[in-house]
Picture 1 (cartoon, rainbow, N blue to C red):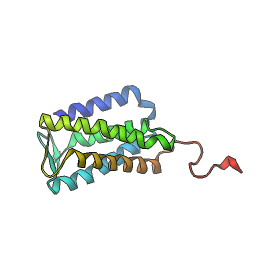
Picture 2: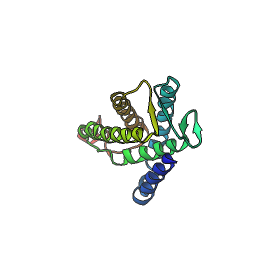
Picture 3: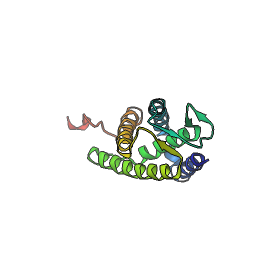
Picture 4: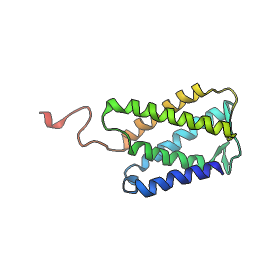
Length: 154
């Protein structure tokens, strides 16, 4: 029930504050679900960690967790800085926040580590966030000019 409440909170935030950009950034939610499924499925099958008290699990992953990942993908890409120099600090900041939340979730008993540490989780989330931004940049147009070629320069 915990994952349902968190997913509902994230989607309520999206519907209240980010509704106009939801259509533009829907693919970030898709990449969040897809990447989250494959990575979490790999880690759960290899018994690195497991989710506890899951409601409607899909191969050991709560269904509401996928809804949460879709919402977080939209929120992360919505607030992604356009300047490349600020994107890595932004992702590191989000990674630190998500690692703190994960520590809280593990202390509450909704997540159990077997062969996993918070350091591994930090690196995993950073890899996931960078991959999410990269895949979303393929399907979401943020900038008016191309990053690599300025068409107005010639």
